[in-house]
Image (cartoon, rainbow, N blue to C red; front, side, top):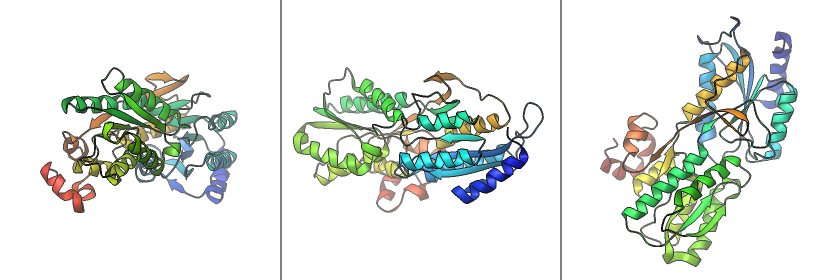
Length: 358
């Protein structure tokens, strides 16, 4: 660890260079193995705002957990806004200011290998978060099982189509081609439909996970395959929402089953309305807390506890849950993840009432 005077100077400079610093409160678990309390600055670098979760969930939950664990820790938050060059500059500035741990959810997981290398060259441990970096081992990785997510949503859709005795084929709407987590989800999606009776009509890697680009692509496929689309396997709620929007705009009624992932409010509303078939509940509090615990462990000079290894990186991978109308009340509302006031607004109130969500 750096000296106290250096750390104070680093934090002061970081305030001027990067902005948002969240001071942390007291906790009972901040003492290291030698009895010294953890202290330092943790950079928390998120990839974009296209997925609302990073601003609404990941950041506040991570900051809250660090505050619980560490009396003298600070969190330096930055968002790359979907720009790998901007994120590289943010990381370089954080490293130059002397942060003690770097938590990174990469915009471009291949380009971000440079961020990992630069940080480690300065003896700054790197925790990759949500999206793995496959070409340069980090010090720790925290995520849900992305390949498992892809397989779960696809298998769930296939079971739905079988139950409905559906005919036709599938549109496969993958995530960003520059995101290695998206490639794991893609692999799982393919495995989930393999061996089913539903042929893949067309498939697409959605640049930057952009919902509008997914919508535009699906609109083009509707022109080609309109009467043959039994369902669509979309990699997350953004691409799923774009898919649903394209199907509705084309006048396809009812909308065939469409998958998602992330359990965003808009996706839960679409599920309640019968417009999206499933999503994945992966409570961000789980991974945000695990990342905070790993970061504070590094500040104490300890090794975070891993349960597996992925891409030569000690890892913690958590198992998510598929959400449909059958379990949305139990998983999303009874558990306290969302409240009816957040979701059951306007046009969705009737659907909530029908499902017993009050």
